[in-house]
Length: 162
Image (cartoon, one colour):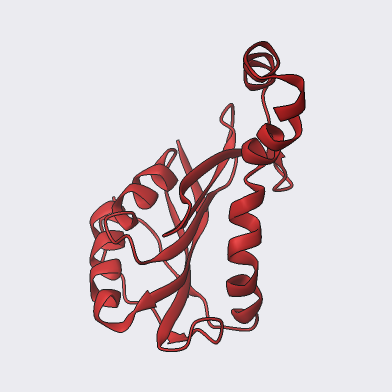
């Protein structure tokens, strides 16, 4: 089963950009050449984004490959497919990696199992903070300036071969 998604490299040092392309190429099985543009939210850094298509679960593999460079800020999305939830991975050097399930319209879905675990193991006063963690609120707040700075930037279209 195949799906598609988007990789947003929100900021990367110039010297790391070829490594990002190689990492994406390794997961997708095709040569990736991104169009890098300056990242106004972080002077001296570059940004790029691309759409991808590939097998279900590719977003996790892409996020794992990009995580090898701890100075890169990124997001990877995967659209839902038949019987499989979508996913969104976010990474910042300060917060690390976050993963959430996504609905067809892109909302983060907090599952029943997650809510039950939260309610059974967390003092009532900590519930709002834990819900914010489950929703990835800190990652959204940290990445929003980088997202906004990328409005109107070029997008590269990729397709997995084979």
